[in-house]
Image (cartoon, rainbow, N blue to C red; front, top):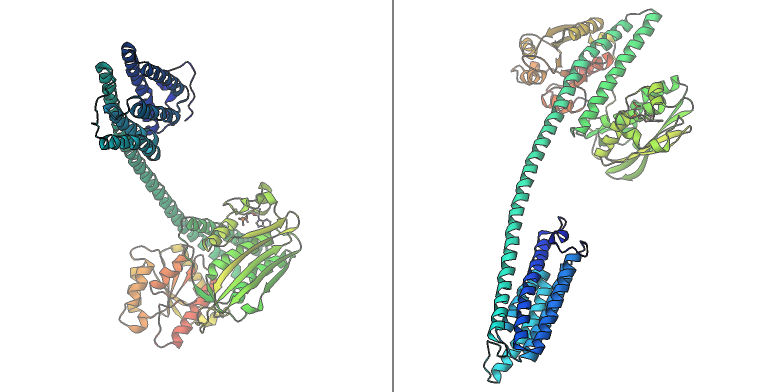
Length: 613
Ligand code: ADP
């Protein structure tokens, strides 16, 4: 304890502070007032022994008076209650033992009182160990002396014979008062402590309630944000669907070269906008912990070729050399993982590499760094000879909406979300992304993934190569039912279908689609998911329940404007066979229609809960 106060200041306020515990404060108060009380009592004893002229007692009482005054001063100067307590107990013990063994040479009521007093004082002031120590040091000699007196047939005197009545009364009374005072004082401190605890408890529960309310509010607002984004995604993606679809249609109608160029710009911008909307949505989804990784069989080499296929063209257009190096081990291996997310990660890294490289190369490497029977560790690397990144910015570029500099935004565009998404996706898999980069020389992004290897015979759907785009004639005899409430989308589809020479019927909601299925004959159903009256999921479930086996097993492709991957599971569990994300790519839709219709034709009793891809 070292709360220093001015030397001449004797006020207790200077030695109490809020930093001290309740117990420390109680101990300081006890010493402060206790020393005052003892001083008065010893002074009375001093006067009394002075009166009866007992020299040794006068000396002792005088000495004790000086000691108490000194300790009081020391306490009010330094607040060092431990030292003061030790000093009091040590001197008290000496006096007690000297009293019993030297001065009066027997145990009397004062000795017993003093022992009791020191026991209480020792425990309260200095805790268990010192309390025990001072108790034993005082108690043992006194008890031994009592036993000795008893065995020598002396009567244990309860009154010190050499003290006069008044001194004895003062001493006994003071000791009793001290015992009562110490107990009373500590009982009060104990009560205060309980009240304080109760207050703290109440305060804590109030804080907890506030905290819960704040968490609730935050959760609600985060939920509202997600809802808002999901609605916006649908609202933005639906007209985008029309823009992209119309530009596709116009491009198919042999436009003049200048028109072709304008249409390409239109399509490019719409696709760009779509990518941004998807990124924002995806980031939101990752942040709100809604990402679920799929475990699908796929061939990594094939997947890498698919991802890089389009990118090679882009790189070549910029005059860059594109190298794709895949370890041979992956050629005949089927691994299990989430190809959509791997595609997203690699696609982002490769797009950046091409975007930020003016000349030289972009190199994608997939190495097997550990090959166990049922697991491989794959090291992915995307390297370029581009503009590079300053060392100070290597962490910041992974923050959402952060680009290396304003110049980057001006020159290359982008939202700064790509790497944030990549980093978070990898982190969800417990993987850290590494970056090596030198400004002006290029960058390399590296990460490793552990992928289980499918050891049994691969299922057909997972790594089956996609069939090449079909000729329109393959669709010409089909009758398609389209459930779609959006008029623009309906118009768009009609145009595609007439180009593909497909016969089509349209239902404006899910309920109508189920009705039409009951009375008409359709080869395939395209089902929008968000529709009034009955949504696509419910309608698909109803169709699967139809009594006519042929109708209930009709292939159903979901059309979804809500981006992203968790829709896949919902679509399949509602009994649909596949899905196409809006704005749909005409070739992809056509290919899926052909695949499903062919499969239906070749299977007598089809199982429709299996994913088609
Ligand atoms: P965006 O590409 O939309 O700007 P990203 O999150 O993908 O957003 O990238 C963030 C920033 O990191 C980029 O703006 C760029 O400054 C820097 N960066 C990313 N990849 C590369 C690269 N291969 N070479 C140089 N800089 C890069």
